[in-house]
Amino acid sequence: MARETKGPRIGKELHKMQAEPLLPIEKKLIAWSLIIGVALLAMLVWTGTASIPIGR
Amino acid sequence: MAQQSLAREVDAAVPSQGWSEDWLSVAAGLLIFALALALLAGADLLGWATAPRTWLDIARAVRPSSATYAQVEGPVTLIATFTFALFVMTIGAALLRAHVVRFIVSFTVVFWLAYLCWVLGNYAYIAVTTPAEMQRLGLGWSLRLTGESGYLIALVVGLLIANFLPGFAAWLNEAVRPELYIKIAIVVLGGTLGVKAAEQLGLASSIMLRGFAAIIEAYLIYWAVVYFIARKWFGFSREWAAPLASGISICGVSAAIATAGAIRARPMVAVMVSSLVVLFAMVELLILPFAARIFFGDEPMVAAAWMGLAVKTDGAAVASGAITEALIYADAASQGIKYDKGWIVGTTTTLKIFIDIFIGVWSFLLAYIWTRHIEPRRPGDELRAGEIWERFPKFVLGFTATFLIVLLIGFNASPPLLKILNASMDQANVFRQLFFLLTFITIGLMSDVRALWQEGIGKLAAVYVVSLFGFVIWVGLFISWVFFHGLKPPISG
Image 1 (cartoon, chains in turn orange, brown):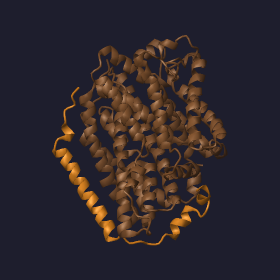
Image 2 (cartoon, rainbow over the protein chains, first blue to last red; image 1 turned 90 degrees about the horizontal axis):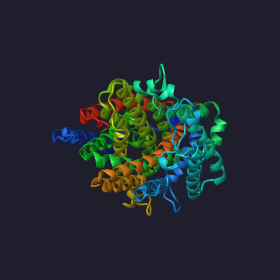
Image 3 (tube, chains in turn brown, orange; image 1 turned 90 degrees about the vertical axis):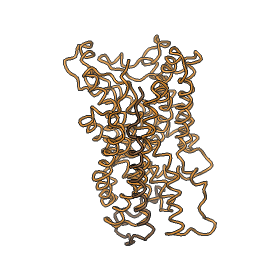
Image 4 (cartoon, chains in turn green, cyan; image 1 turned 180 degrees about the vertical axis):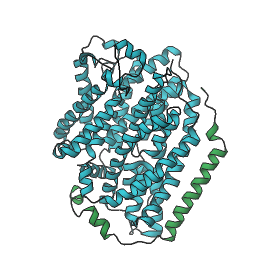
């Protein structure tokens, strides 16, 4: 492993990187993650998780 | 140096027949916990251990944590603490198949350097926080940084060594294991939080319920946005973008390594992303607790949640919770408000652990998408459900065990029993603090800024800067405010 990191510098690696356009599956992953995430957070707020009494 | 230590962690993350750092942290944490818990049976097995106290006369800086050992001299108790830590960690090093002799030597140096920083941080002119204590000690002024400033001193010392004495840092490499140290500390911390939950069940359960927001935020919101930024704006390939998104969004090093494994990225990718995560976590650790002190002194739990959501890697996140607690509690104490200890660091840790739990599930999901839609695996190398368990952070089991054991004992305990339970966890806490300290100095020792820059990580760092400072910190703050504002730690006494 250590040998591997002593090989080509990361800058060169990144420079060599081929352009990879976003695939439809990646777009779906991003979009659905955000939609579900925002919806779940809204639901948590709406169901009152944010205002559950402290109960000291 | 940083790459060597992280490369070792990537290796350790690959399932093998030997012990992993994860299981070792569970074993070491449970050992300390069990020895401390023996106090319930009347056996004071850890009372000799010592953490430094506020001092003006350095000869009085270290004393045993228990009255049972009050007659033992400070240097003796200090050597006993070191010997115990060295003994446990050397067995651990042998189980990890590390070079034992090299580990003993480097751990000894790291321990004493770190402990010296800790003692220095407890110097009265640095640590004292309340006017009453200043009057008692006859001080005209104090920096009011609390004893936890020793952690920051250790971090800075580690950082200076890594950047100005890289040869020495490389020589210490065998003992530079911040993830191991913080996981042991977290397992021990479970017991402390268990006592607090037993005493304040309502507050503890409402913090846990709010923990779900942290999971949603890290996996579904942060990850998606950072992945998009890395792919669309910076033109990163999938091999780099996915581990980078996990490193910035979820839980730093562990998540970057798990994701790289799941999508079959080259090990170099995980190592470089992890190096970057540690570097930025260190920067966050030096800035965010002080920002939290300035802006959220009146909302301690918002500050606690913010540290858990914004600071990456378990070590830096929990450490930032500890610093935030020290700073905010110190300000509160100077105004006559004495909060019960442990609630800020406990909240930060709880959120971090909630996020950690799902690393395996998320990696599995990514592996499924990659194998089905992006890069199908070869026959015989198909995706297995067992990969979820293989990538599950096992130290969470140790944390859960210590938390539940103490909660169950403490829930219906009589006040005298609860007092002994508290005392036993205070003894375990000496080692929790010690492993925190080792985490701080070793995070510093891993952060060789110059070496990383020479590797040409500028573009990777740019994604990190844009994502972290343009998005992660602020969304984390917003969510923390929505879910945690108005919550306050209990008042002590």
